[in-house]
Image (cartoon, rainbow, N blue to C red; front, side, top):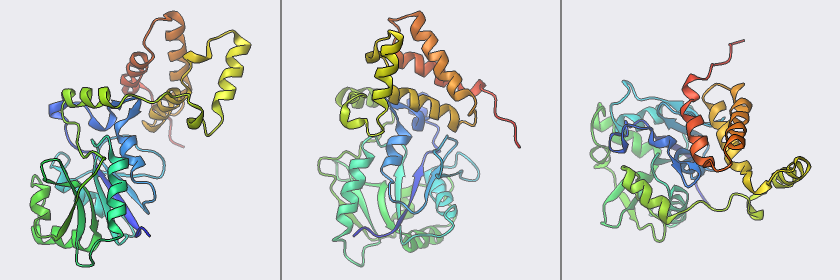
Length: 284
């Protein structure tokens, strides 16, 4: 049985090798990269994202102080944001596109981990431990930070050096992170988006509505990707511009209606880039 755990996702980097873009907000095969990583935290008592990024309802967001002082400082800020710590803490970088599968391997390995292990850490193809793809005993993690002192601009590897960590091979899962546009392109080419309208993905029954509405209006239902539309509207809402969520999808429809040959992904990306100009709702 899986032990109770919290999750800390470190998302505060500058993304310099990616062209100074928010890696957490990258579109990876039709899904925001951070949302992929957050799926891997399912079951956590508390989930914390460290970074200046939109998060779903129920996820705690915080920043390292001062901002931009590295992942070790970010991890400590994430730990500090948990009000009632669980015995274990799942630590993930925000740029792991195969995080759900990788965490599945970690959680399975935890069942047979020795009692004296301070944590379990996935290792890459070269045998290097990936300290931002690991499960740690929370008290051990706290001791490591207390012994290290100020973690600002220091390496996570250095902080964790005092811990007894069990290396875990990822098997068929990947612990590759996405640092460059080339790595992103290679990953997307190898892991294309699944058909959004497959019956097994339509757990909420939205497709029946889409097909009925399109039939009544003489539209091609095959051109409507309801999942992509919902991701777009949620992204706008998460940025604090909730009234603009339906407006954004209306604009998307206008754009695609005006140019049937337009790429829906490119149009949605353009709308996402415009989120920064959306007005924030007035406070009550």
